Amino acid sequence: MSETVQKTSDSIQYAAQIGRLDFLSAALAVLGILIGLIAIIAFIHFRGVAKKEAKEVSRKVAKKAAEKAANKYIQENLLDILTANAHLFIGGVNDRDADEIASAQENEELS
Image (cartoon, rainbow, N blue to C red; front, side, top):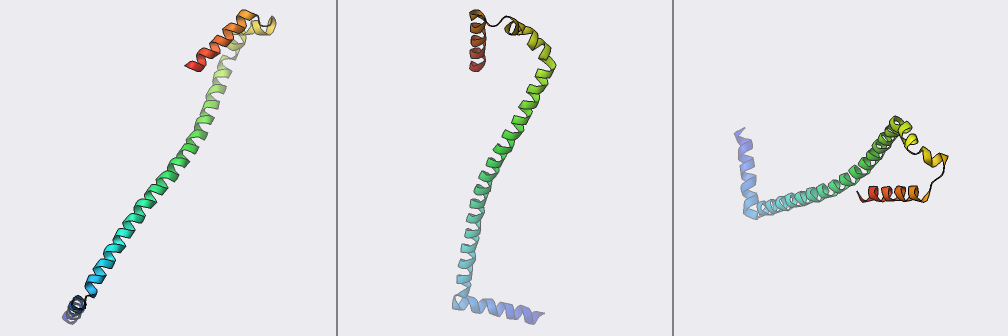
């Protein structure tokens, strides 16, 4: 066992004497820096990809949820909606009703 330790020690001393140990240290340092830079670039890239995918998925989920909520609201309040607007179906729309409908839509768009 001590013979192996002696050979390893001799190899390191020999490499240090001829300058190979300095080259190896520098090469490992450069390799470490390159790996670090690649890791940072990969993190930034995949973070952008993840944000893009999250936006697409959230948009789809929100659309489905909004459609479901709107359908539920209409189903629950259909009779009230039809009753409130029955005069539109029976007698047509006069100018006053048209103005009220337009102003109500404008108020909804602003809020």
